[in-house]
Length: 239
Length: 239
DNA sequence: AAGTGGTCTAGACCACCGA
DNA sequence: CGGTGGTCTAGACCACTTC
Image (cartoon, rainbow over all chains, first blue to last red; front, side, top):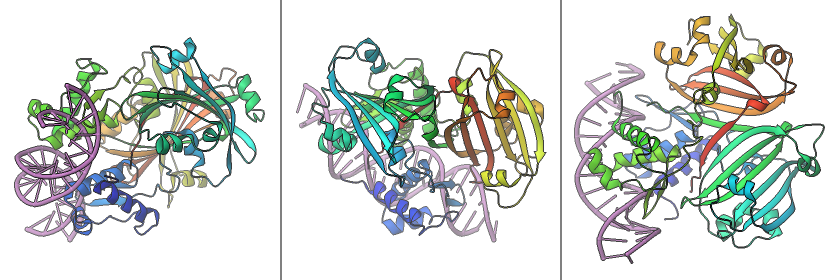
């Protein structure tokens, strides 16, 4: 239950590609060979390969085989659900988090609209800035529904909020909808970020849901424009 | 061959959701019921459901069923491969395309690096602006490898380049890697776009590949910052 | 013609949910 | 407990590439 067979096969092939045991441009073993190697049925192998394909590791070509792609360089887990991790997790720079505010609030009308709340219910408001090399370049404003996250501390917010949610509270994150726009910096941005003569902020707004399809968190992640970068791998679904 | 069974089922369910024959928040029929309805095996039904899930239409919950999600409002085909379509295709505004340049060039070193070209080979360079309500807000610079796209005309570029590539040349687009950043507007931006006192440009750089894994196009899509919006649906892959 | 991936099937067992 | 989705299997046939 910890892992299904096809995920284990996916993970194994993933590592082999990352460690260049299989070089970019090469063909993967055929599906039948992989059936042998992993003692699995073909459909199970194919699930693992489909996952590799979705995540940009391989390209399957009918009649030929599965080519290993060369996108690994900057291909950190695309469309992960937290923008901070996306940026920080895979870089070598030193990131630091500062908690500016942690309060339990009753949402006002504007927030209720943003969060699509029907009734008024208490919400954790967390404001944090993220610094790299001592320069605050990201301002994260999180709003979490208290009936799902009963307690929060500054300590949790300063370290990894998501670790806490997933590993301590055992919450299962399901999906999120994100929206990226560019806006003018406001007073709060100027106060809490090192604005560096820059007037623009990239705003990533996310609605995050649990696996139960229950809404759970709204996040506004405000990035200094010159420090922002979003990478995406998109596959064409021929229908 | 035109369509596989599971794609047909996916498409049918898609339409039913769009037309609200199945309401958001409701459960889809169970997998076994769908087997009956579509006269298909369960794995085939599950392929269709997996596709719906990937594209944000449903959330599957073990032991319960598949809930129809309510993301339809602004959920245009996320992570399509062409940023112009993403913006224009599903809006009600009137868009117009102006072709500024269409030439066959030998790429210089900078372009060769961007396009990851080993040898020097002729490349189509297409510069177009996109206007909405008479205001030019997007500048698209496309570079297409001529050995794959032998001929281009201004007429094709003014209408739909991608229609031509897919339907006339029968090219099969496979996947793309995109990168979104924010940069200062340059002279060309100011000349060809209605810059509106704005100094920033959202730059979407894409490397596009065919299904054969062959590289084929580099695109730089430069959006006036205040007109830019990117929407993404991301699913957590629990492993 | 042989080998590859693409699709579909029927059946089995498990993990989870709700009454 | 019964019904749901999650996983895995073995086998079949098709479409495509390559020789």
